[in-house]
Image 1 (tube, rainbow, N blue to C red):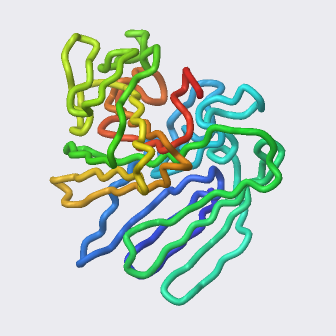
Image 2 (image 1 turned 30 degrees about the vertical axis):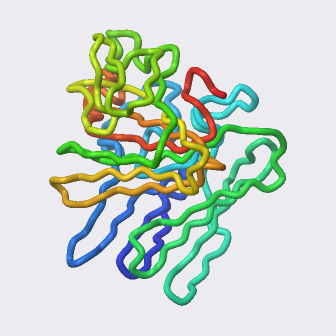
Length: 291
């Protein structure tokens, strides 16, 4: 597996060239190393066996990746989440500038007939990775999403930019009790993120993690179009750090929270993928109801 190291004073990023994923993001501040993002437990396990047809991104899923399309395409024959999260990238150019470094990469596959260029930038003493994706020569429309994942082994507190409402899709993420377990009510909606309906008739606070002892759930948050900036901040009290994800609401008007807490029982998940919050900023809905 080839990777590319991008670093500036106080931040180190490792980019997995084989799958287009950020495999490491560490911020150093006041003598501490902060790394709030998640990597699947089987990533470096050579003994892990995968069911036939497993999409490549799942085998080493880590930190953050770009989806084009999000979920499954009904136009092109691609893996789940598209080629940007499942195919190799090559370095196009790198630039050292005063106070930072920038690198651009080209996707080895085309998306809707065109190229995809990823640009990653780090700056001295900035605790952020700045990234963008540019489509060159593509035709048509496609739902896209960024897919960072936060590790919350001791729980966390979430805050978000103002949302119009939260809603779930028509069918739960894991409707078969033999294969998994979901906690939220499907379909359902609420303007109060602190009181979302659950499948047992109760309510749960979407901004406190975990929302259940064992569950696999997706819920979409609709951005208020008046917001000049969209954001999600996840405080990890025990680890004494914060994961912050920023977006442009006009480009990515929705955010799906993926609560992954041992609620998938089949391989490679096997009930061990726990304490993860995916923050999926996008211009699309969920797997079963793309819009």
